[in-house]
Amino acid sequence: QIFHGKVAVLQAFWGNRNVQGSRDRALLHMQYKKRKPPYELIISNEPAVHHSGAVSILAGKEPIYRLPVTIQQQVERSKMDKGERFIYGIMREVDKRWRMKGHGPWLNEMMYYAGLGAVSGQPRIVKRGRAAPEFHCDLFHPMTVYPSFGEAGLVAVASVYKTTYDHAISICRANGWATEHVEKAEDVEVTNYWEMGVEKDGEDPAIPSNIVLMGGHIVKKRTAHEEFGRIPIFIYPVNGVPWRGLASPNMDANAEQEGALSVVDWTAAWGRPIFWMNRTLYRSLDRVLSYEAERARKGAYGKYLALTEEGQQVFTQKEFEDAQLVTMNATTGESLTPIQPPSMPRESLELINQVFSMVQRGGLN
Image 1 (cartoon, one colour):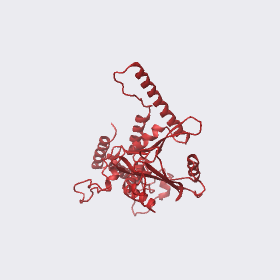
Image 2 (cartoon, rainbow, N blue to C red):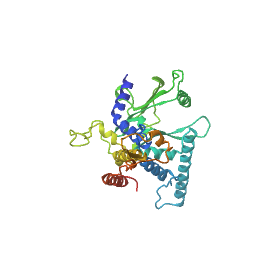
Image 3 (tube, one colour):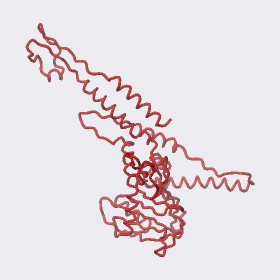
Image 4 (spheres, rainbow, N blue to C red):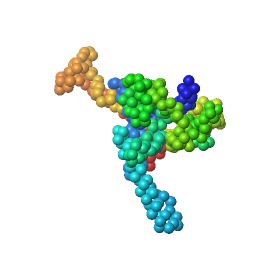
């Protein structure tokens, strides 16, 4: 119960971050609103274009790794040159191991998350018997990672996510954990909790401990990892506001006013996507364009005014829509006049241009 309580506290603290993250991803995938036929709906692809462009720029080419060089002898320079090549080899091995798990390029996926406001992962070295060491750096979806920071770094972190039963079993086997307690289900919730040692429980506060549950059942008992001096997981915000602490003052001095961010609300801005400045503008632009598209849709169906002596029906609506009426025999006092559809008001055009300008200023240059 203590363990579940600690995880629940972390999840509640980061709840607003996940709410905002879900909204950002709905914008990114152009799925924040559904069309209700027959009404028109236009959803901008600007968030996807900006995000994809940023990922392409940052991950389109392998990074250049350099160790600082000063006034050194040739022996030291040679060692540093070998060190740089070793770094290249490690990162290519990390990319290879990541791709073997069904993912795309490691750097591309890291920058994908960075463009959405945060990156998280766990670098590790795996040694199997006499085989060569394996270099890994598993990336986590930041919205599934719930950290608590202290002066020396992470104090505790919970990674909570759902996966398939087969994948859960493969995780257990790869790490040598028990599998008999994992119940077969459509999806299995995995809870991976790291915490620095609790001194009052007789643990060393400088050594992290780890416990793993799957489907509510323990597959790895709480274990102290003396090989680490810190929790071996990283989570970093990108493009956000500074960390405020679990009990920090309100983010805004006028937090009592409507719309101000409270002590918890700031977590929604701890990491922000590259298009965060245009979040509301995209919706405003989509709304105005959808109104104009609806105006165009209604105007696309021609409307006519039929004038007759006694108001009798000359031809049916179906005949007109099927274009079976080519000519119309009219007598004195009868006529068929098209009704001019309404055009876009000048105010709407100016509004669209103004919103477009703001979107451009808040986007990538």
